[in-house]
Length: 223
Image (tube, rainbow, N blue to C red; front, side, top):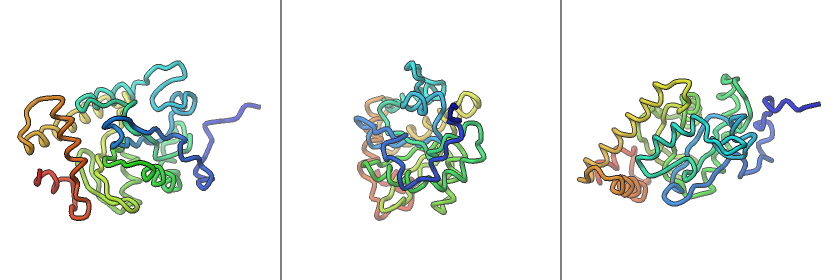
């Protein structure tokens, strides 16, 4: 009898969940960034073992939208760290994101601490909701915030989910990224250059004084 994979709830066995499962480590300057999705996609992670890719190597529409967004920093879904907040396969049962996300939180924190990440990009309002509940924070979509998770502080940038189901969200994400880069450029006196954009973000990530800053906006004022 076939297993109903859509009913898998890894949140019921957190202690034995493999750290590397649904966890991609980044490369280059993407090693500093961890993108956090909602839950593993059946036609992506679950079957292919790769975030945003099908078993035959095709990039899913959400991945294509995310690549367009990351291109401004010379990044991609392949070069950034990536994981899912919910380690369960919940299919279309989105109401389970909050419940499973809270149970899976210890796994996420372990993955976060497994590498030297500095910037966390969350995808989707449900992911953001769980972050705010468990961190007792007021993170907002489009706003860079410095916040402590476990023993470290990180920059967190919540974004809308890049799924093509809501194309307006993709446009809003592009506006958010443009606004952030323009703000960084203004405060570092750099002008429209891709290489400079990369250097600006690297500079921001490398010079966060996490022991003193209440938010990333304070850091921007000091660059």
